[in-house]
Image 1: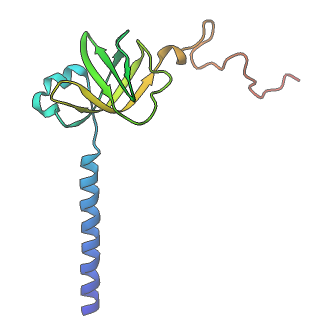
Image 2: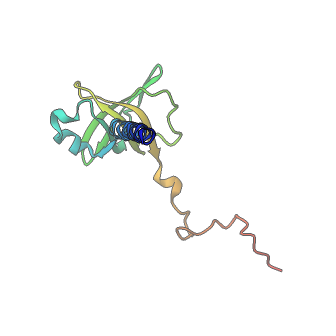
Length: 147
């Protein structure tokens, strides 16, 4: 009976450790999506919290300095200065007027320090004139034979 008691205690310790690691790891990697206005309403809670903020890149605001990039996100006339400090290159679709999503933390100086940037260019994914959305372009072979 002693063998089974030791085995049960060992299993309990292993399971307890796994549950603790899952809970601790899940909380540190949690990222919450906020609008720029919601970020401003968070007050002191916003500082240091890992957040994801989206908006449109303001025209003329992209400034490259060394390995970093600084730009302004705009959403409903509310602006947020973002400094990209990540090591990955910026997406090709990251341009003036494109939609962007910044993942990072807000500093006390009011600048959002982003480690990741995602960008989307809406016109790139729109249907061409004369084609229905979701329709295959006319220059693609669908594999159907006309014989």
